[in-house]
Length: 126
Image (cartoon, rainbow, N blue to C red; front, side):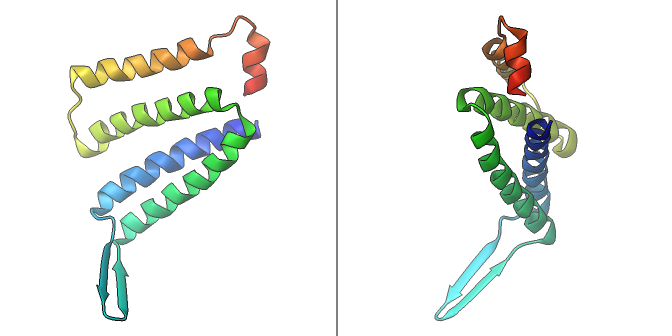
């Protein structure tokens, strides 16, 4: 159960980080003049950046707990599809027919890769 929670938390923090960084409108401004260093970022972008870093730390924990060939395609695919949906819902970005077909192919690939003859094996992985 803890492993499932980590995967869900990773996906949520990744999507939240990406969305907030885009909402914040900038990734940071760096000014270096002589011996002076200045870095500025909007609060929303900063929160998004922190969420994204936290998702990376959780992901480094997840890859230790799961088989790489199992967890990477699943998490990557879920993040890709949810990013597509977030862009459409939050930012009114257009989704082309190619985007829809691609998302369906990603989902199909995840399902096909993880269909096992032995149901017990899949349950053990989660």
